[in-house]
Image (cartoon, rainbow, N blue to C red):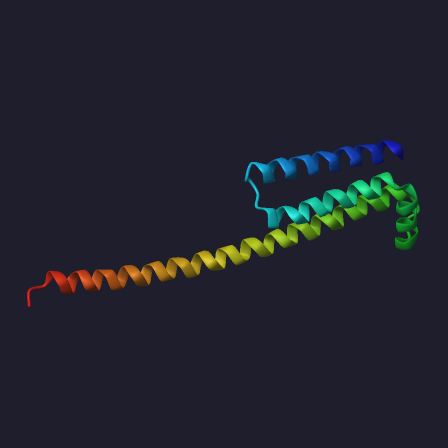
Length: 120
């Protein structure tokens, strides 16, 4: 039991360090790092607090507390990935709208250029 908990503690500390370094180097924006930091802190707290982990396992109905932690890990990362999917979808929609606006502006510029170049 303690081997798995120590492994997850190490993973959560590595995730914390990776996110903080990425924010510092501007590889990830702060508003997107919050969910990753929350996930890492959740994992760290649960992997270090056996009493809380046992209560969580009892609440979920799982006999083995580390298995409950693995379940929580999966759920937390599913939520983080869902949030990222929403952000990517919004960015794609914004990118499409921006491309359409640029195409309209190019059309108007071309018409103005044609009007200016025709004698008359």
